[in-house]
Amino acid sequence: MFLHENLSVQDNGRLAFCGRDTAELAEQYGTPLYLLDEEGIRQRCRLYRDAMAEYFGNGSMPLFASKVLCFKRIYEMVAEEGIGTDLVSSGEIHTAVKAGFPMEKAYFHGSNKTDFDIRYAMDCNVGYFICDNEWEIVEINREAEKRGVQQKVLLRLTPGIDPHTHQAISTGKVDSKFGVAIETGQAEAFIKRVLTLKNIELKGYHCHIGSQIFDYKPFTDAAVLMLDFIAHIKEVCGYQAEELNLGGGMGVRYVESEPQIDYRENLRGIAALMKERCAALGISLPKILMEPGRSIVADQGITLYTAGGLKEITGFKNYVSIDGGMPDNPRYALYQSPYTVVNASKADKPADYVCTVAGRCCESGDLIQENVSLAKPEKGDLIAVLATGAYNYSMASNYNRIPRPAIVLVDKNGRDYVGVRRESLDDLLRNDI
Ligand SMILES: *Cc1c(COP(=O)(O)O)cnc(C)c1O
Image (cartoon, rainbow, N blue to C red; front, side, top):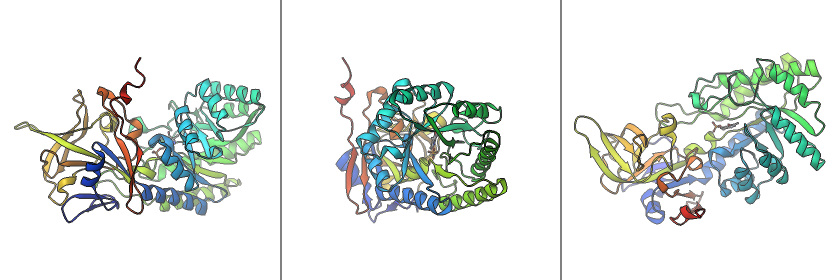
């Protein structure tokens, strides 16, 4: 009935998540509440891990993109499933280290790593830096020299691919703020410079074209372009990249009108085309890395809210007010992201009440979704927003001094446990003088 496998309707008409009554979980932990399907997340890690090993071989591996969901427990899970991670800040590095993540499998991103970040990442023995620009490579080289080490580096390049996704999540076009452009010749000049740096061990290149991409053509276009570039650099500099990181961006189904992607099949298709291209270019296939984020966790999570108000503006629209909003999920306010909303207390009833789901902040733009259909709520009904595992908790704020919700995981035996405690009112004052 519902979008994802971890959702079902119980005999009492209520929504279940991983076989657990959402009303019971809400009763125990309060709302708003983030719920995560631990086994579902692990399965996606394994899917990417096994498919990449099978289709690309050569030590190829997925890296979980930390920015989509960062807390200690997720690093334990990712480490147990044997995959790597990418990180974009000292805060993410610190979280991974504290969770005992094997840092040799960590790749450090960011378009403006501060000098502190660079030192901290080296203190923590982060395996690879993914370098964005010239100032940064100079600083990495300087710091590595001071420590008498060789730092492994990938260079972030912009292949000039438009993945036809939302502007704010399109990152691989030539005028992007990320990386160095291939088209303008700047990438080639950059590589020549990097190859002269004594304390940099250049391992290869990185590109990330954007997010929420359903068609796999943009990925193969980018991959082929990168392989052509690898062959070109081999010819002009005698340097062949050992590793090629293709970034993340595989789409996720948020609403029924979006397709369900077969990730394994996509990887098979991308690998086949890349191998063909390598043969044509006379180069060996590099070790391939990918950075799936959203497609590992988004549909493995939901958020539960309590309906606290219903406003029917005669002749205009209906609002359902919930006890959360843009502080725990800013994505509709940021880029009109679509979501499916369900009345979890009446999941067996027809979803025939058209309304706008509004948050509790003092902003008219604080909406979770406009004009969605759900069973008409009564006061106290549980409202579930589906596929909130990615870019919700990690983007959460304390706007209006609202504490962040808890994250509760349900494991494969149906046992629930807290991954992140709910913030208390005193937590909000922790740093106030
Ligand atoms: C955001 C991002 C990802 C993850 O993207 P998803 O769409 O969540 O898979 C991977 N790599 C880089 C460099 C990113 O910026």
